Length: 170
Picture 1 (tube, rainbow, N blue to C red):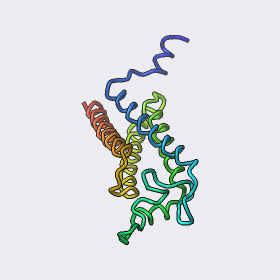
Picture 2: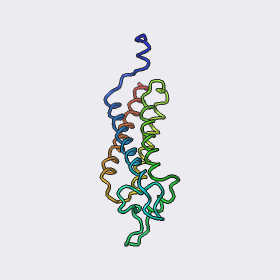
Picture 3: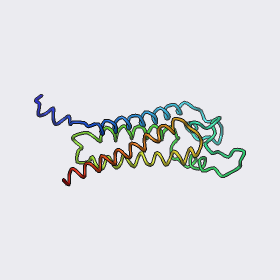
Picture 4: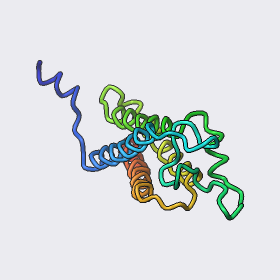
């Protein structure tokens, strides 16, 4: 294989891109781990969502689920409305992060990089919002660690997009 061919297959990667890749892989692995970990969990009762309960909910209950306070439960109603078990959504989310992260810097897809970047930012933003809608204020250490990772990912993707448009116009 000539050097010209090798250069087309491999493009230089800068520090910002390396950090974006690492953050994407970290959050993908967190979501895959949560999803796979939930798959084996049996529903706790007739009201439990298929595929396992939300991580951190005691005794298989849904987060915010009608406890002794008798208040309205946004978490429970949201989980009941999900089209798939939460474990499946975690796995799909992790796979989406990995796929978009891999596609982002493929030289063959360079002309679509800005679209892929926006999709990755939207995925991270939707994931953050969904986390707080489902988990509410229930403490979940892994979630509290992963949400800043996703927020930083959005910020760095925005900076990278801004830099790339600045370079194109210069």
